[in-house]
Image (cartoon, rainbow, N blue to C red; front, top):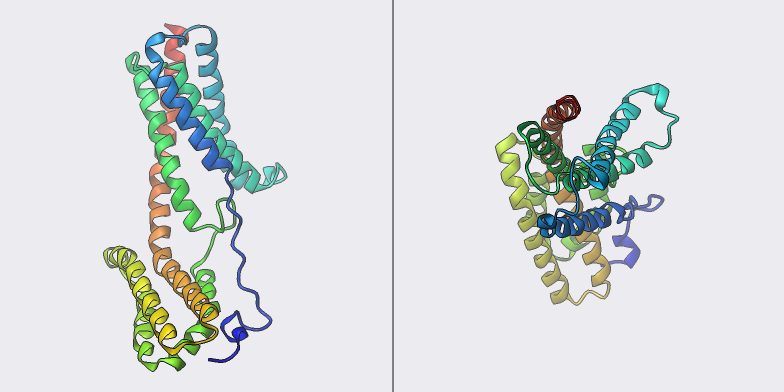
Length: 282
């Protein structure tokens, strides 16, 4: 089987480091969900009224948060604002504002529907908030971490090469595994249309798990002394391979999400402007 070093990354090249998980957004989301549940449960008490006091102030605050969301796309596209902090920090603020603003608006409305214009504004806000929440998960799949630079398919494919040495060692031990590995390689690298890519998206994980079990059984039967290192290298390769196969689908989903999210934002700001005008003029 060779030395343990044989199943690690090639000499002189370190495996790509995975970004540390940032808990700020998940924690903020969970806290917002708890507050929203409490507010909904107490809505009959009418502690907050939308036209006066704290309830009115929460409406102004929530609207300010929604307007501040525009700083991220403007900062990203307008070169004169590139000195306004790191883009990752601005995006994090964008995500936090996207949680805080809708929550404040819900409390402002006391979790109730009001007039027709306020109902349209609230519905538009909830659509944008839901779209942003869903888009965050797709975004994380095509970026290096939640705030990192955009991944490209070649970069994802490069990560798969760090487990290939381990694959070669396993195949040398059990030549019957060569055909399944070649089939897996063809599956993850073949360009496909939208429907076929979606089917592969669902099937490639099962394929990788079956192959990992076959490798584990082969290594156990051969009583290889460095079995853990070999299995870890193969699993790293399989994980990267699954990511390669799913990357194109995530990119298409992200493009589709962006095409939907932008018009929803236009609807939101238009409805909010009409609501504010109707409240203060009539």
